[in-house]
Length: 422
Ligand code: AMP
Ligand code: GLY
Image (cartoon, rainbow, N blue to C red; front, side, top):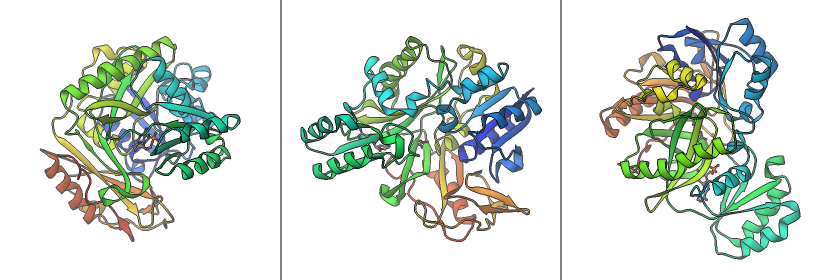
């Protein structure tokens, strides 16, 4: 039996908890800090994901042997390295602080990709003292211009700008601290025109396994219009990711990524999230993340038949080569219910009703909390409604039906998830 602690409070973490609870090896399960959904199936602890000392103390108190890290912030801050020193017996699922730079620094990731011949957009890295060179670079080609804050910026650090003068102004503003320290270095990338998808790899540092492919929908509005969000829905599998495209992803991206991790002697026991774009059927890396995606996890985990604790244990002890990922052939869709106004100003503390009327979908809580026996909204992205079906149409029909049933004031969701693919 394993006692497990999950760090995080989103739909991804509720999905982890849901999957772990189904394992034959699940002892006790804790989530720091968790949400209204994880409270029902695990024990939430009011500890922030960056409070390493409190996390350590709770791991000792509850005899935790596996710590599964959901979000990127504690990884980039070095939770792996901290626990390696403080609690060497604890298996941390997630990369080391240095390896987390694959997500934590776009410049580091770009250098890594160039070093390993991994297809990605051409790029030019700028710091304040190289502003003139940065401007000259922008003036050397017509747009669109892709400007990326080097560091973590909660998904907001990428600007895509058509106009050259606007791009120059934006570059100056970013270097001037628009995203704080995160944009003191800016990576200017060539614009890639294609369709995006997400590939997830679980690695023990030497061996790796590819998990079900997914696609997320980031814009608030239908037809992918409007502001970017943390994710409005997702689907898995992805029809345009053919077997041959996936083979190319493995050959030209995953294999050299794993080789690069070995060459740089990076400690990596966890998930590698490849944000990819297919341009004329050839895959390029848009970004690396050092964790699972959200809302992709809410469609990927329901399609994995394996015992999840067996996967985590094999990751920790370096025996992933002995594991075969068993994919559920069914289709999975997830539709996010969000608070009206999100991703701009929105209200919290709205009671969520009719959850008990949901049939044939899996409900993953994100921005919710328990309040005197009621579940209330506690964030912009509130609940993910995930459904399995024989095909996309059947799965979506279930997600949409239940998205309609669950209720709270000013609920909004996109009715066109999966609209652009078969
Ligand atoms: P990132 O945070 O790097 O994933 O970028 C956020 C979003 O910006 C991506 O999901 C893409 O939609 C878009 N994007 C990033 N890089 C590029 C690029 N080089 N060309 C076109 N779109 C991009
Ligand atoms: N779905 C994108 C992310 O998790 O960053």
